[in-house]
Length: 210
Image (cartoon, rainbow, N blue to C red; front, side, top):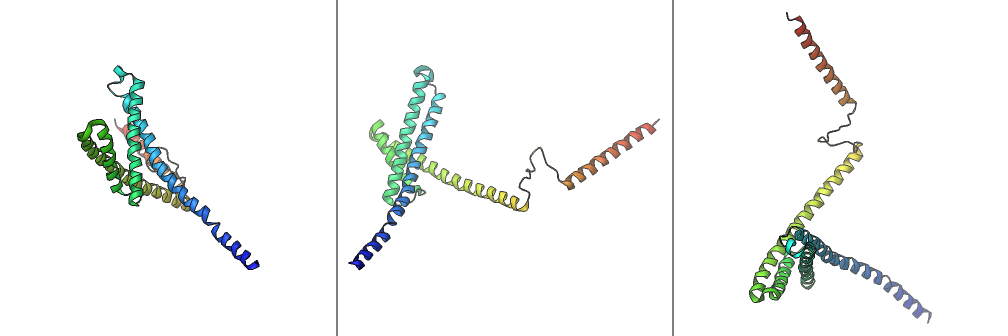
């Protein structure tokens, strides 16, 4: 009996840590796909409202109606596209950086929304447009994200190197106000003295002239 209880307790101890790890591993993924859907949808709604501010229909239909209509349409289209992209990525079991997911999601979203708006011809036209625009937007975002990551890494390394060298408070060369060290101050004073001597020499030459 004692050995059975010990084995049961050991099995419970081995099985108990697995649940937190599984939950912690699943929660970041769910948070990521929610972020990839919610944030672009909100940004698209804001962009749609901004386009409504400069729309030519704002005078006839009203500014509030036009802005809300543009914001809703942009948010719906973007939400459908991002949701389809995540569905395709989960179905194909690929990462969020796969461009094929964007093309397939844009094609499917455009076909569905185009069918609701303009029938079969609208489905064909919208599927091609959504596939091209969605793929181009995601490709540009991935390139900019990599470039921004490299740029921030370079800035961080420069700051760390400046801190290690003791000159992390040094202002860039293009900054209009500079903090000069002793050598720079001595060179500046020597330049000023040379300028004053040349000026005095020119004045003396003018006085000697008849």
